[in-house]
Length: 114
Length: 109
Image 1 (cartoon, helix red, strand yellow):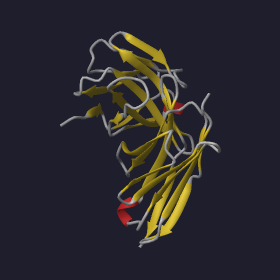
Image 2 (tube, chains in turn cyan, green):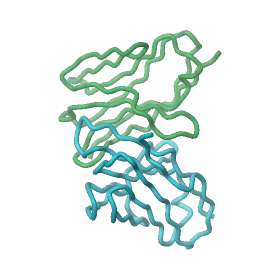
Image 3 (spheres, one colour):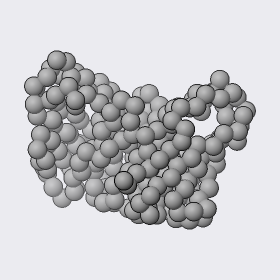
C-alpha cells in the first residue's frame, strides 16, 4: 500500500530533551515536507526537500532540523524542544514539487513538550 | 507570501447542502485544492480544480472558482454525518502548498 508512515503517533517529552520524528514513504517520491498544524493557524511548512541531500527552510523552521540521506526517509529533529513546539506534525510527500502533483500525508504525530 | 483564508466553523443539518468558502491571494496558481482531515487522521486530497475552469463536479462535491475575486468554494450535497471533518483549501506557492486555516464542518443528525 502506498503510504507515508510517521512515528511515533504520540509523544510527550520534556523541555530540552532531543527527539526525532521519523517519516518514510514507499512511493519513490522526490519531494517531502514537514508541516505543523496549530488551532486557528492551519498548516505551516517547517522544512522541505526536493530530493536526496537537498533540503530547505519553510515558513517556520526555527528550532527544527531535517536530513534527507535517502529518498524514502525524511526525519524531523528537535535538538532542544520547547513548549511552543507542542503541536500536531505532518509529513507529506509528492512525486515532484510543482502544481498538479498531489501531496500524500502521514497520519500525524502529536507532540507535547512539558 | 500567499494568504489563504477560510471561516473556522460551519454547522449543517444532515441532508442539507454545505458550502465551504475560501479566498486566496496568488492569482498565478494553476491548481487549487480541497483536502479533508478526519479526526485523528492526516489530510486526504478530496478534489482539485484547474484555474481555467469555473466549476468541477464530482458526485456530491461541486467546486466553484471565481478567479476574478480569487474565491473558491466547495459544496457538498446531501451532507452526511460522515462528512464531519476539517476541510482545507490550498494553493501552490513556489516550493510549497499554502493551506487555509481549515473549516470544521459539523453535521447535526
